[in-house]
View 1 (cartoon, rainbow, N blue to C red):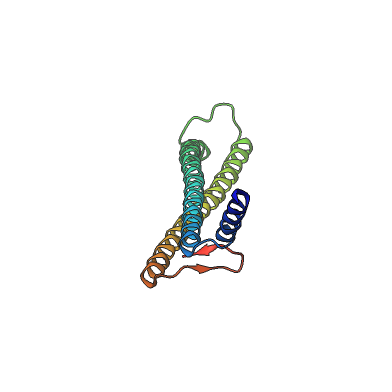
View 2 (view 1 turned 135 degrees about the horizontal axis):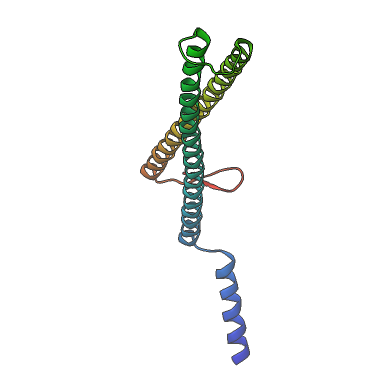
Length: 162
């Protein structure tokens, strides 16, 4: 008699465990959704930090570039004075001064191309940041729409989508 009671109890428990209640499924889906949202927020934050570090590096490089351009400009002004005969050129002959001046112009052009590249990178970072903010707004609006409808959709991969 005791065995029969235990046996029937365990079989009724098994039946209950094999069909979880809808509220349990809903809770599990909600937990899964919150976990996915948390992971998404963490990824967004990481990407934001990467862009920030890259932007700071670009800014530092632009500042260093500006210093080098100023130094070249100062050296160029002095060299032009020497070429015109307005300043004492010392032992330098005209060919040597012209050679230095052309090297200076080439270096200045190289720095200007590098500056253009850095500005393009900075613009890319701004656009990526803008895109990220727009995607976040879209996710928030979709989450609000999903909550107002009171439904939770599932993607084909089994992930809960707001």
